[in-house]
Image (tube, rainbow, N blue to C red; front, side, top):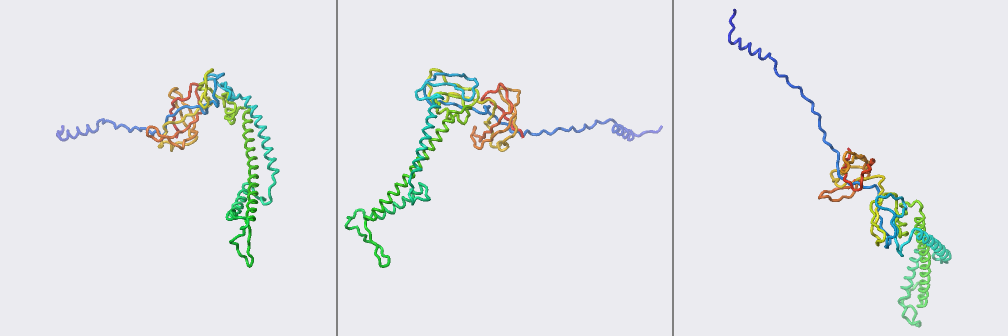
Length: 352
C-alpha cells in the first residue's frame, strides 16, 4: 500500500468540499414599476343645472299659496298670490297691456302724420333734421355776430363805420339789414328745431310701441318661456309664477303674512341634470384642465358609487381660498342618483 502524505489528504479534502452541493443563487424577481397617479383631484359642491330665486315685484298680504317645498311645478304655474291695490293679476296685466298697445299704435300714427306734413324748407334739402339744426345754428351765430356791434345804435346812426372797399365802390349798410338777417336766421333755426322735434316724437312713439308690443307678447305667451318670464313677473306682480319647470326647494311665503317686494321668497331648481362646481382647484392644477375633459365624481354622502361627467367650463377669474389662488371648474354629470341633493360635497377626479 502506498503511503499518502498529509498534503495529499488536505488537497483531496479541499477538492471534496469544493465539489459538494453549494447554495443556489436565487433568480432576480421582476418588480412592476409603480406609476404615479397624475390625475388632478379637487373638491366641489353639487348643484342643479339651473335654478332661480324669485322675488316679489309688489308688496302686500299673501292671500294664497298653492304649493309646498318639494313640489314640482310647470312653467307658468301660480305659486302664490298677493292682495295689493298696487299689484295686478295676469288677466289684469293682459288687459292693460292690450290698451297700452292700442294707444302706442295711435301715437305712432299721429307722430308720423305730423312729420309727413312738415314743410321742409328748400335750404334743408339733403340734410337730416339734426344736420339742419347744426347748419342753421352756424348761420344764426354768424348773423348774431354781425348784428351785435350795432344793436344799441340809434336808427339815425346806423351807417357802418368800417366798410370794406372793393375797387371804387364803398359797401355800406344799416343795422336794419343785420337785424333782418338775424331774424331770418332765427326763423330758419326754429324751423330746423321743429323738424327735429317731430322726428324725435316719432322715435319716442316707436320706442313706446316696441315696449308695449314686447310686454303684450310676454303676457300672451302660452308656453311661459324663460325669455318672457321677467316681463310677466314685473307686470303681473300680484302673482308669483314659475319661470320654468322644476322643484320648489325653498318657499318663504305664508298665507296672511305681509310680503315685501324685492325679497327672494321662492327658489325653483331644475334637477333634471346636475353639475359640480369645484372649490379648491389651484392655479397649478387648472392649467391641466380643459373643456369636455372626462371626470369621475364621488359624493361623500353616497359612498360606493361613481358618477361620470365632463368639464363644462373652466373659470377665467380667480378667488382666494385660505391663501391659495383657486379657479372654479364646472362639471356636468351624465349620471345621477335619486339620493343626490343640492349642496352635497363631491370629490372630482379629472382623468388625464
